Image 1 (spheres, helix red, strand yellow):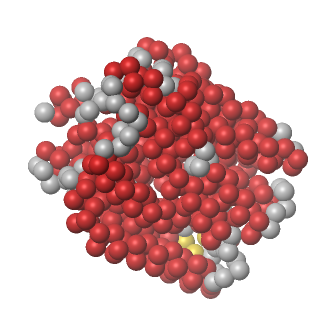
Image 2 (cartoon, helix red, strand yellow):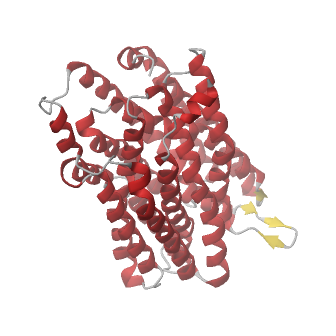
Image 3 (spheres, rainbow, N blue to C red):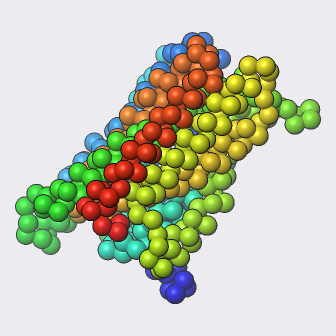
Length: 428
């Protein structure tokens, strides 16, 4: 049975994973440098750097709803993916110019680029699976593992280049990665993706179905429940995205990063999360598949609840680390352990959310609703940047303890809502 399941995976999964891998390489490579670049090179205050970081990482998840709408209605997903990748390259190479006057222009290019790219590549993957809902969770988890190869190597490569040669070369290396991804995608897309995403979904839908663009009563109930889940997902991303702000600053200023005579660059810690994903994602994929066959797989709502509870545990640990750091720098293994717990939480919510949207979205609105899902990251990143910018102005243990309480309280509320949400979702 397992062999039969693997054979059903579409070949386009690997091309989309490879392309997204390089996009994530460019994004996380740049993100690993962004806060330190603003503080050390542009001389921003910690609070201003946190605000800019939050706004940038928030808006890259706001624009996908616009990109999804344009893909569904006018251009098709594939043209939007190409446009986004090109704009991403331009923005990164503009950052590499190391010109303070170009800094916000470069960020704007990358925000627009993500709008075209982000929701549409996930939508095309959902199209490749068609009606195979049973395989989507596992498929999106494999996709998630693939893209995190980029997130693993980017802080190591871009961080090392920036450490040795300067921030501008670090940003340039991120741009080169995106250029590689774009080139391979254009060479193989027609062969491996077929006609998926070539024409606007609205056009393809109306050519085959004589039905107005209206939601059915069942679709409305399911989408309302999905929006409720999105509110809780905002809390998750608010805590998770501290990785680029408060957790990075904790690694820089409060963590003993010495291994003998070697000092580990701060950006390296952001490679822990994708490393764990690469190790754990295939295990989770096999676990979800095995549990599904036994009819014992947790529902999406239950997986979300587990994720929030684990995030709360991670920040209880960070609160303890923050308390101990008052007496001096603490061991790096605090962060090593916390990133592991956060990764397990992430695998219970992020690929599951992408899969859930692809299952529930009416075909004529698939990319718009995928973009709507990314709004959770928009609001989460805005809040993460705001709260991360408080690092240093309030006690570190209190900063992390607030995040722990927020996560655990949200997990408890969502747990109480499970019966109601499962009624609308069923066993999805």
